[in-house]
Image: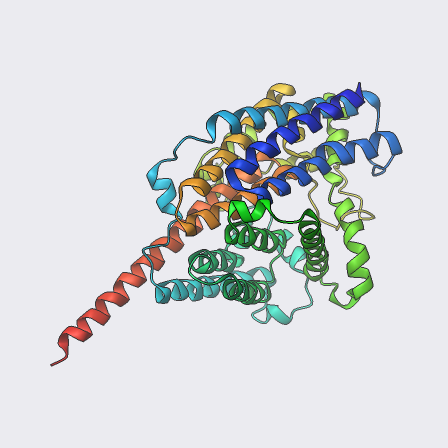
Length: 442
């Protein structure tokens, strides 16, 4: 029966790949295929057939079957929603929210500088040191120390990342590929150093989004799979090195460890499957979460810090599930101290109301995914790039809960909406002053 479910997973995944390739191009479709294959087919097979799972988890037949049924339901919902709803035209306001075509270069760069300044203030607060760029404190420890009502400070500290997206989105279609790639590397490098990003995945998805938007659909189809695989492995190495940097272990980086350790690190990133199968196995011994966190995450109110609005419904599902299954804390042999484990979209949904919860969380995930597809297909070049970034973040967000992805969606609307307003306002102000100066000349 396990073999049958794995085969059905593969069939639905291939169908999804063909759908996405036609709508968003081969590169993003391949990312979806490879990532979902690893989480829904490869890791469960390794776990069940070869006993490759973490000590706290299990590979009992009933638990593996329950997990596979949940992930299959997830993929089927994605297929149906993408096939029948991704062609709808999104509201004009939603597309304009990410459209920076009215901005001028000076307005874009001034907005980027503004976001860098905001990031500096936030980073100085979470590191408790204005010289945080040279601090020995790891970015991960600094970020996790802001739990219990102050996590919003991490968004402020990483606001330079939104500034980087703004700059690359504006210039991606206005420059030759070589020049825009050089600008991309320069902006990402300065952003990474300036704010010491704890979420290093964001840097990698910007690279992939740039590649997707720089190549036409025809050019993407002609790409050699081996080249794409090599590019993907280079990104794995960057992800691995970035993880060492955020943990403050830069002294341990060397070429051989980076090249070969990336594979091991990629395998360890599949640990949410271990957490998920544990949840399916033992959820009957715990009280269901009853959609409480989802209710708290469905509206933009999720962005209001609980330290400001204590009555806000808590929306951090992963933290709640980690406390539920690991009341003594996670095993520091395998996870960094203070980590919250994640349980995948269907797994965290199962904690709400069994397979009804899986259906609801999968549906919310699919709707958000279609929103990004809508903007990607209908938006301006800048909106298309931003949609590609968030589409890729959404794909790799399968490892998280849907509540976390809703928070990502709303925070993106907030920061990028503010960035657009500021960039356009500054552009119009500077144009008005330039025009006035010209008009005053004799």
